[in-house]
Amino acid sequence: MNAPALRPWRLAGYGSGSMVLAAYYLVSASFLFYATAILRVPPDIASLVMAASTLWDAMIDLPLGWMSDHTRSQRLGRRHPFLIIGGVAVATLSVLLWSIPDGLDLWVRTTWLAVALVGLKTAISTFVVPHTAMGGDLVTTYDARTVAQGYRATFQVLGMALALVGSSAWFFRPTSAFPQGQLNPAVYAPMGWACAILVLGATLVTVASTWRFIPRMRAERDIPRLDWHAIRGVLRDRNLRALVLMILVTEAGVQLTVALGFHINTFTYGLSGPQIAILAGALLLSAIVAQPIWIRVSRRFDKKPALYAAIALAVIGLVGAPLTHVAWHWFPLKPSAHLVATLLPFQVLAGLGNGAFWSLPYAMVTDCAHARERTSGSNLTGTYSGLYIFAYKLGGSLSIAGSGALLGFIGYQSSTSVQMATTRYDLAVYPALLMLLLLPAIVWLLHAYRLKRADFVESGSDMPG
Image (cartoon, rainbow, N blue to C red; front, side):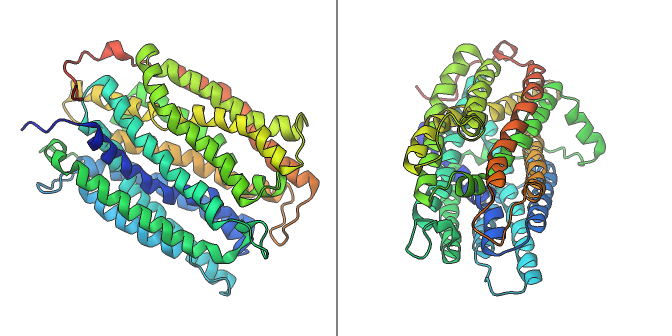
């Protein structure tokens, strides 16, 4: 059966589903702060809950990808059942997570926190893994896979912007009682409801706009079991293995900065919610603008060289800001208005570099899956995507676990809104030093990836024109 042409508005509809990740980014940026500063859960317990949930989340990605690859539904195909169930569950659990009453006993707060977070992470994976794989199902050519993932990444960043910038600019705006609005306990429940509405809308749009392509996404007849032999067969793919290990190491460094972002901006830089929103907005806007740029760069120089360039920009932005402002004192930390201006260029560079990581590696993963399909005849795009996302989240869980240990090591006090000077210094500098230590390993692992455009001899185009 011939499917209809994949027009840009349908690609945009597909990509809009990645705004469901707004729920994920709210957790990544605000969970530790919410748990420690608002609910007053001890940092070591809060970080353990976060790390355990992320580890669980990572462990289910590969099985979910395999299940999606082999789901037999004539009406809904192999991706859409997961999108519908996952989207509704993400919305429901977002409300539950951010609405925990402050007056409960510590063990009740902690239990509620853990159950809601694990459930939310499970629901996010249920949606995201099949949705990511669907980008490889909708198109069939080398460059078209980059375009599809570019649309997905654009809406992913837009969802992140609505989550992070929206929370900082609207929900965390200063009041007379709370000059730093992120310390106001009353704003978190409305933030959860707003996230739920966004998730439901994104789910509806992506399901409706890709409905006609379900015939492309029906499972094959032969359904092998997901066992160690099958997993080992996937792991034998050297190119996939290089990408998986690269993102594992990358996220082990980057997510430490993300997990501690509110702590750094609040205590080291002394920024208000709107000021944090300006910086986050600059990073995310740069990441959105970067998508067509990286598509063109990858067409001109191929995907791997483009990713090398992105790594350089991201490191300059993420590491340069804390070193030049806190470690080397090139720029003053006061007044805060001037601080925002000097941090802004670093945020732009970080956004340009990180923007590539939200599209190019995912396109490279689907390239690996299509290369395997040519030799084996089996389409395992969901499994490949699940393994990559597993590594992404495992790296994050390692850094998040380390964030709680780091908070304790540097003397962070959750019972007060004022931290010691040494604590404020270490909050910003230690994550930057870790990223520099991991950089050689990231570059070396990317070097091991060998696929290139010349390996794919394809005719035709997925795009009308």
